[in-house]
Image (cartoon, rainbow, N blue to C red; front, top):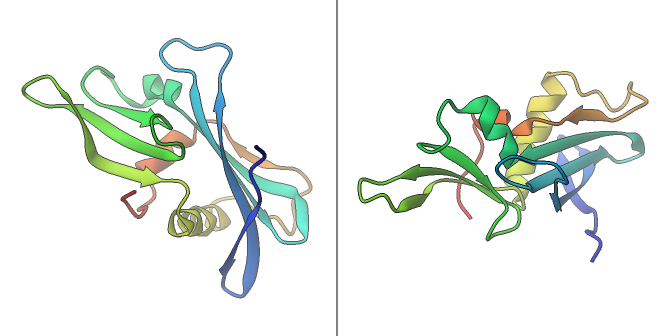
Amino acid sequence: MKNKLRKIKLNDETYLWKRAHHHLTEFEHSECVEKITIYLEGFKNSPLQLSFREEDNLILKTDIKEEKWCVGYPDNGVIWLSKPRADKKPQTNHVNINLNRPAVIIEFIKYFNLNGWNPRKMSKPFIEENALKFLEIINLPQGI
């Protein structure tokens, strides 16, 4: 099923966005990727494209057995920080970021509008392949 574009308003401007779950063909630890695409209405040639790849934990975390971001499974669109408990069972409710929530998308729009994405002046996509790092930079609303 194709993901429909959703509308969101911010500062009297309309943005269109979608979230999709994909799988990598080459990976070491996880094939899962959540992808967000955001357009300023009327500027479809210059979207913001964010890819949240669980595989990028290898760049962010020194020991992914101790702490890692889990992407899109079992809940499509939800990324959570997994930290093992003392009894060695995974703890998956510590930090949850739901990429399906408009409040999360608004925070991405605000951040990237201030940090390089200018859809009115650009003629190509603004792409962040390693967007997992922004979960630790941007103050995003939590919860499913």
